[in-house]
Length: 315
Ligand SMILES: NC(=O)c1ccc[n+]([C@@H]2O[C@H](COP(=O)([O-])OP(=O)(O)OC[C@H]3O[C@@H](n4cnc5c(N)ncnc54)[C@H](OP(=O)(O)O)[C@@H]3O)[C@@H](O)[C@H]2O)c1
Image 1 (cartoon, rainbow, N blue to C red):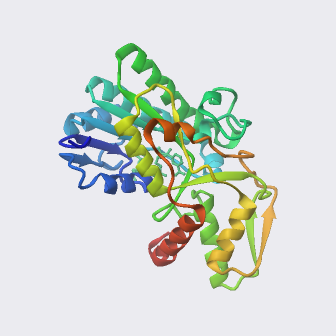
Image 2 (tube, rainbow, N blue to C red):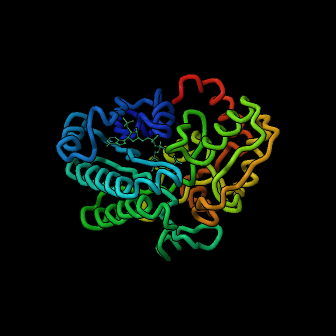
Image 3 (cartoon, rainbow, N blue to C red):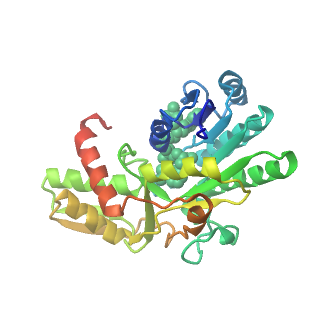
């Protein structure tokens, strides 16, 4: 019998970028219901809404993905909102999942919770060894408190709850709004618009020297499903591709793929964010058999194609 058979599955944030891919992978798996409420149905910052959501959906499994997220700019402009919304939503979802005796709960954390200076590659064993990078500390720490809550609830109440830590995600359906987007959609949009207007220059944030690792959204959803089905431990698990790239090299890959022939200027008055990001992905492979399957160049091509096909409908 497959793991999902006859289960009622609640995906908070199921209408979002990662959530919608996760939900499409759950379709046809034999679950008796996959419930994906948006914030217009239940505002998870409101405890009455969270209580009502659990009462009405009666889930056996909960994936908690709902969050307020964004790139460095959004994190710098809204640290209070990112802290409060992410903390309060997670705290209430975990508490109500406990009260509702949910069979298993998975919390999607973030590698923004890692210390600013962590040895490369980031290992789960060093997760608590320092304060996060300042621009994303409010977001990263709000999410880190959910790990504390999950571990405390597992210890005191025997709750079956796990935490995964995805690296930066990208892919078709990402947020391309320059006010709040992450680096890959922002670069794609800037280069496509520059190409189309025959601009000779594009100005990018920071020095370009920081490095990042990226996980294609389909891979991330696959990893989350594997973790729900197979992982059972209080310790968090990194989800990544293991492929580190500098922002400068990333910009060259995207500029070339898009066909932009001008120059990139680096606005060094803007922050780089965390200096390096590269994950040790051993644990996800050993514990639940996850290995990413989409390389950065293939994933970028798919994402660029999606953006070009859909940009007329994007703000
Ligand atoms: N994107 C990344 O690079 C990345 C990297 C690491 C971890 N993560 C984590 O992955 C998860 C999904 O991220 P994403 O990029 O898919 O985010 P997203 O596209 O911005 O989606 C956010 C989701 O959260 C819901 N939400 C926000 N505020 C809510 C509220 N007050 N009440 C109820 N629902 C609310 C939204 O619902 P509505 O649209 O209906 O408001 C939406 O479905 C998050 O937990 C995030 O921290 C993301």
